[in-house]
Length: 77
Picture 1 (spheres, rainbow, N blue to C red):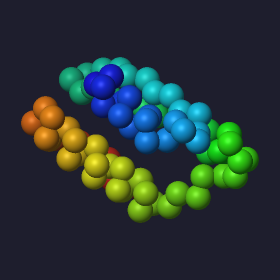
Picture 2: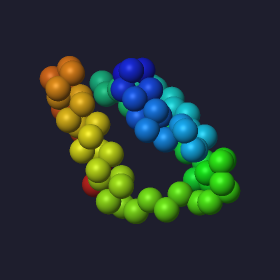
Picture 3: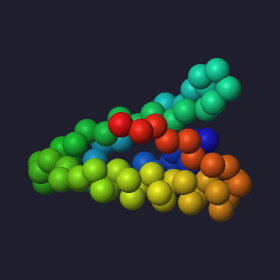
Picture 4: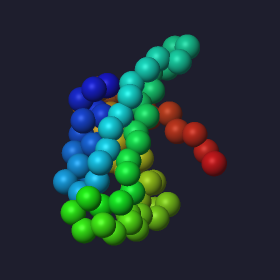
């Protein structure tokens, strides 16, 4: 789980402060990310849209399957 979280953080850490926490809830491991949406290099706010979130979710799902044969469980809105 730590490796996965580090990969995701690496996508944003060049420009944004981001950290994560891993915990187990019942039988499922979870990773939570917190990101400061203000770019610490130029002061601009992260302009990401929902599509960015879904693209990241797809990337994580593919990574989990290819590396560990694990499926990503998503939560709908």
